[in-house]
Image (tube, rainbow, N blue to C red):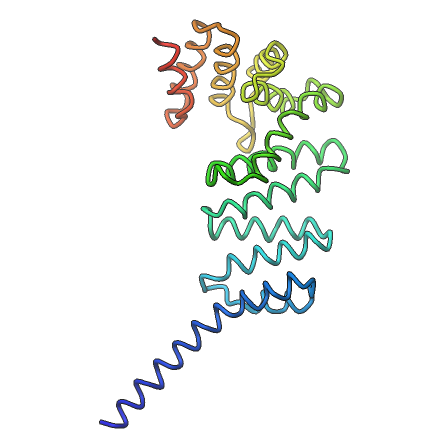
Length: 244
């Protein structure tokens, strides 16, 4: 009987130690990271087992380390992994957006066209998950405010910029005439699988026209958007408003 009791105690002790080790690894790495001891912190986070619940947090902090070291492509990969493992963490998406924005800051126009929308989508997701995430909200509003002028200056007729401009107008209420023009041009384009869908474009056009007071046309756009994609809640809400 004594042997069994000792065995049980030993097993409980081992399990407790394992749990504490997993927890302390993240805490230890975080302390090292905050002390800017990047090599030591990196070693700790990379040692976190992939099958554990701490792995997402480890990937996040590895992304923070890579970002601080200006290794932005690596940082993006880490943040992508972190948000895949935990898609409900707003901070993972916020840092992913910041990273893509940083990558595009001094890149050529084609690279900017690739990472710009990724940054926007990441910030949008962060604000959806946590409306109080101030950093994501500030970044998102700043991007929407700056995007129109930037796009017109660079490549005003490129399809991604047409959509981005129209979307920024639909959300901010700025430059509505130009936004309407851009979104109508985008609707003449056939988007690829990884590009903004036509259903979303009709929804944004409806939002623009609703803001301009053209309820009849806005209603038609919302109807088309819902017909193409029944999952667009904002289009359904717009259709309800313009049907009154």
